[in-house]
Image (spheres, one colour):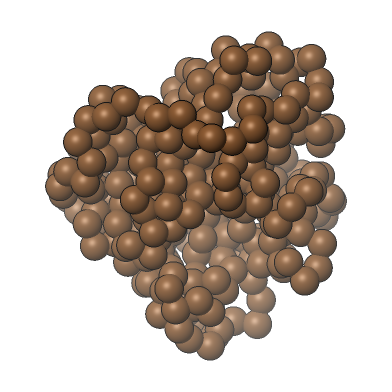
Length: 306
């Protein structure tokens, strides 16, 4: 696999995880008890970001990559506790993904596009739709066929902390599919689409529709390889908005919210919640789902799973 070049500046030397003073996870379904043991506790791994987002597991380095959006850095956390810079001056990069070739794919607010980094450096793949600048790509996922699906809300052009202020050039906020062979396709319009992920069989696309003035929700859309179905409400959260989320090997969703990580099963039934001291932006697992990594505000947290 190609080696992603990293800046490598050490922001945090090796350190042990630290306990966080917060209520323990709440489990409402015995199925979750087998995954989230009663002894599970929230652990602090790093607390010096400005706005932590976009965690993704980096198999080639056995490390976690995540963004400090406002701090304009892409970071990596190694198992000894080191935090190092991958890109020390990212262009307000938010969502991160790894493709099958081991390349880092990022949604960038600053350049209002999607980039890909390999051993040759970083290249912008797409930054416009029908000749007009995108809003501010936020989160993304790489499907098994190599297509990059990404959301394009306006957060990165409406909040000067997260990008460069600008008026939207597009009249819609959409989910897009980009492929090397076929280019960019507009798949569906939603009200501030945010986090997204596929079911394990890739027949369902889940998207967080996060406009707080409407009904913040996670929607589910069927996908047959050609057509994306009509969105239906799949899950909601009790506080704040659903932001990023991850789908596990059981097809359960682990959804970020203001109160912590909300866990629902493949039918949207609530299983439990992992409380956090403040808002969660996103979460992901390591390679074998033994650890859940959680980002939010200044923090990177971890919960050890069964």
